[in-house]
Length: 230
Image (cartoon, rainbow, N blue to C red; front, top):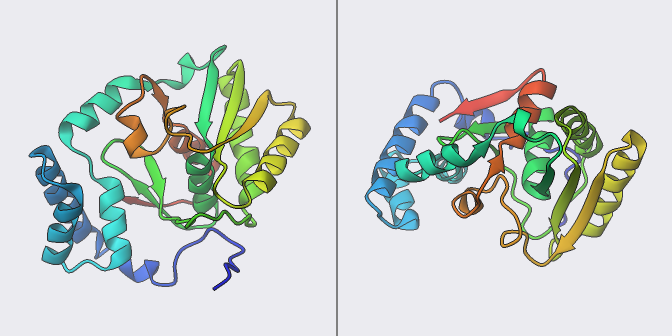
């Protein structure tokens, strides 16, 4: 079925799944999942156990999985997190889709998760294909304003070449950069994970340093935010 979305906004069921009265149950599920991860239980089976216990639906389970983190990993990620004032004059590498879709979702009124490792994550799922939405260029412009204030020496966006429409997104990113006179490059690669460290939780455990960019941009540039703190 073709993807006809024009916004990165909420799923039709999200207002029920992430209503205020549902949040305490979701937080309890994240607590339990973190407890299991602390004891090195397998993530998939742990998520099923927790999801079944709290009778969570699919999108709620996705949110719990994206929000949970073992304590030792949380401490290690936070210890390697770079402060915004450390970016000036340094090169910055971005996991493009992770940063962009989170800011797009925030602008569109979609759920943004405040995870246990302090990162902001969205609920978007591309399934191998990226679709430009109404929020794409505004999100890039807001990312650009923040990066201009932070002052990196250059900014390299890494996009997954196997994701369809990566080439089109590259053109949009470069156009935004040209208009705002930003020192951006865009690289299409088979897999960004071995190259960089960015907003994805699996990558955060392997990187030396990382900037919590999506959170910085959203907090600075999005006035109305649906933030679900789990």
